[in-house]
Length: 92
Image (cartoon, rainbow, N blue to C red):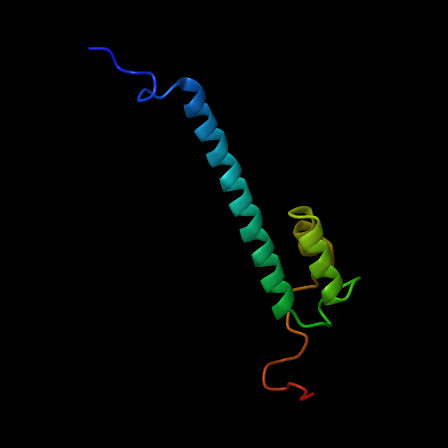
């Protein structure tokens, strides 16, 4: 009894599936990274964001994924410390 070629997976199709899985994983990682960066940017105090306004950093993050997010995290994100002590917030 001979197995037909339609039911037998070729090595080329296995490689294609592996490449597609790696590409899908890379795309998912890039989307997760952009989501993390944009969430951090949205929650950041505007006084803590450096060199560009928040909308500018959002555009950089979305246009040049994943390098824009990396640039924001290294250059645009200010120090993580609090700008004011707790309990002494200025209402605005």
